[in-house]
Length: 293
Image (cartoon, rainbow, N blue to C red; front, side):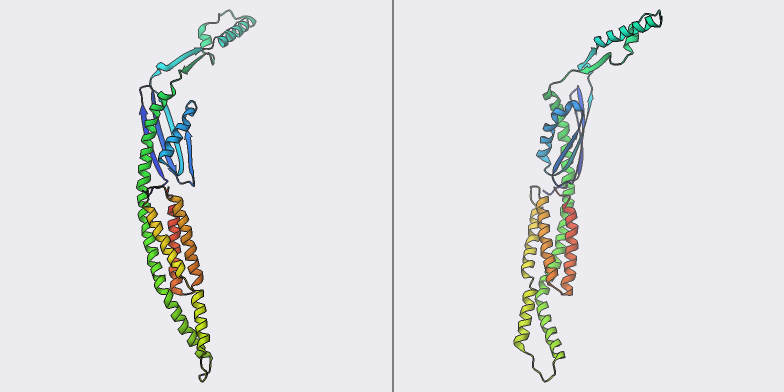
């Protein structure tokens, strides 16, 4: 199923100790580029997160934002820096002596000084943290994928409509191509008759040679056949189950190559107009394909 590379999703999960909130945003990118932003002490989970994302998203830039809130404070340890407290007290006592201050240093004075008491969280088991975070990521990913699928369906319908328009112009080119040779023969013969005296005969062999030369030079049958084949292949690829963005981009390059050749070979006004129409639709499709996974 065709997917867009643009999507957004949220997910959350808690286990009574942790509360994770996850946001995932995806945009178009040539490769699968994953960026994870989360609290530094969770960096050890980055590879797990990226592996989980790669299972569901094959192409695009993926930005993951993870916020962690601790619900239960039971995993906090209070750490007193006794060495620093002694140093503070020693310096305060010395300062009091030198300044002839009679007040004694009290514990309240020390507690107001920085870095004396710290709250540190007891390290939780990695598996426990991951088991809480993973469902939040799964929920956000599912929402992202759903959005990418919905937008992919709209892209698919739009590109199918444009391919239909291309095929209409291509059919016009196909029907017009043999007529061009006949018209060229008539114009060439008429022009020669205008230039020659009435009593002079036209060299039919030479005329036929010129017509054959023109027909060979202006022959676009091979390009038409290949363009029709590429068009059909493009439509078939839209209905595949695997990521096809790169494949569609390659097919478009081949379609552009064929229509450019047709345009360079033919000087017919009707065919030239059809070529312009097809190139315009191909450019619109190219812009859409840039956002296909």
